[in-house]
Image (cartoon, rainbow, N blue to C red; front, side, top):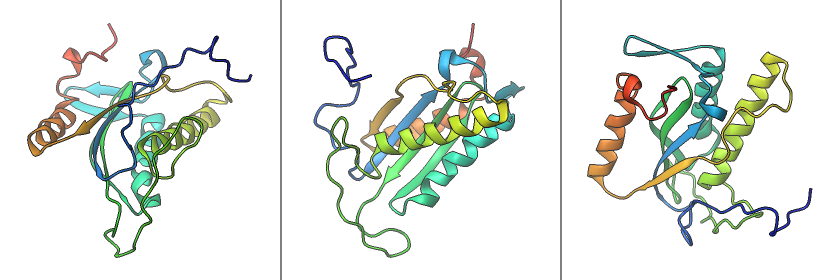
Length: 179
């Protein structure tokens, strides 16, 4: 179906004019469709992943393995969502390789190694893997879009890290906990 502005009222929730491929730390939350507890469960205060959760975890880790300018910080796979910190560092990576500076992403024109492109690839890969084991090709796994927050200072970085680490402990009070 061709995009029709009159029919498709899709608004971006991204910060207008911000270049999501530039250096920085980004707090990401990606939710399962309809908040389905697809990735496992909480036993006491610990997340116990099932096969789908392990696939999501492994694909998240691959994110930085595939991209020289991406580093992952704290992350957690929860029963129905994933939280993680992605750090983009353009220039010289840990392996000493120079990177070309990216250009700003525009709707319909993805930019390599930008947050939207990384998340799109992650969601696509996990969806294909989960649908393959469930024999449900084409079934959506994820909620449309995702939440992101640009981390602007060290205090915020520490608080977000702590939030991620403690997410399994606080599952019963989590706003993403199914009622």
